[in-house]
Amino acid sequence: MKNQLAMRAAIGSFAFVSICTAVLPGTAHAGGVAAGTMIQNTASATYTSGTASGTVSSNTVSVRVDELLDVAVSGLTSTPAVAGATDVVLEWSVTNTGNGPEAFNIAVNPAVAGNGFDATVQQIVVDDGDGVYEPGIDQVIANGAATPAIAADGSVKIFVIVTLPGTATDGQTSQVDLTATAATGSGTPGTVFATQGDGGGDAVVGSSTATQTDNDSLIASLASVALTKDGNTIVDPFGGNQAVPGAVITYTLTATVSGTGQADSLHITDAIPAGTTYQPGTLTLDAAPLSDAADADVGQASASGIDVNLGTVAGGTTKIVKFDVKIN
Image (tube, rainbow, N blue to C red; front, side, top):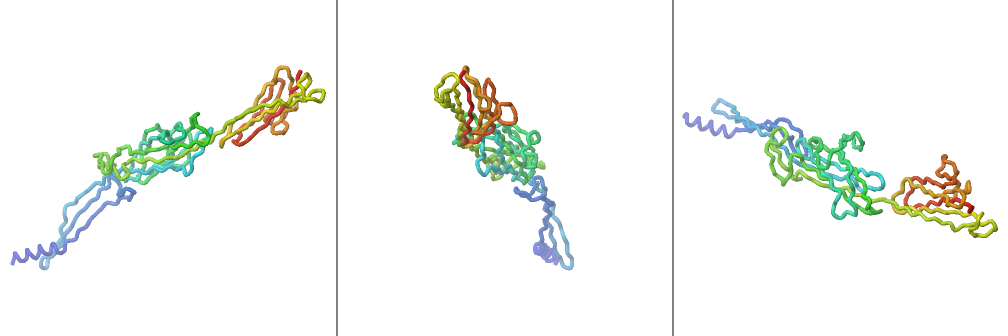
């Protein structure tokens, strides 16, 4: 009889077993449960034996979630950035798609195969979180150095400031690569860095290999200036066009700006030739008179020469300066 009761109890214990799992709360991330989270599991069994019933619990098994190392990089320039005389700010987004906070080494390569020119990297800057490049406020890092730790699912914007080399020509294109690599390490998916994970567990390389690259594009927008001088317009005192004493020569200076960019701080200067005298009040720009004095307009002239400050002139523009001198 005792054996039958024992058998019934055994059968009952298997027939009514229910498994209960207790898991500590953890935030869900792109890489899953947060690194360092302890997953705890305890089983229980309920049974009946005759008119009696009971419950027993197993030991508790705890598993610490390892850190998954994953990253995504995205260049934020949808069309090629126009690169001219000033520095160009390129932008990337680096997202920690792992499940724990991680710093990422940032490497910038401007010498991409197929480039028409290779830009010069001036600075690499980590945004302070407002999404706007702020010199002197955002953190400058060396090429290859690490960002501050980025939270799981968090992103930072990386600014790269570049300039064009002197060899670049108008219309040439270029690419700049940015690579982000987990500071803990990278490798084939499944590579393990023992005890290096957040919370004291291991760090495991995810599907991104913990290193990713994307590029931004540039197009050179430059200008060139050609200047020609014409002194063929002569009026002599006798109504002719002979270069005799007393004749007036009209000089025409033509500045032609070519290219898709702009010429900055463009000045046209010319010394009054020896043996001649500048004729006051004859200085013009595009047929509009300029005063000889150094005043609000862009020109000035004296017995020594003329100076016309054209400032910034866009490509595809022609500027014409004229003035008269008299042969002594």
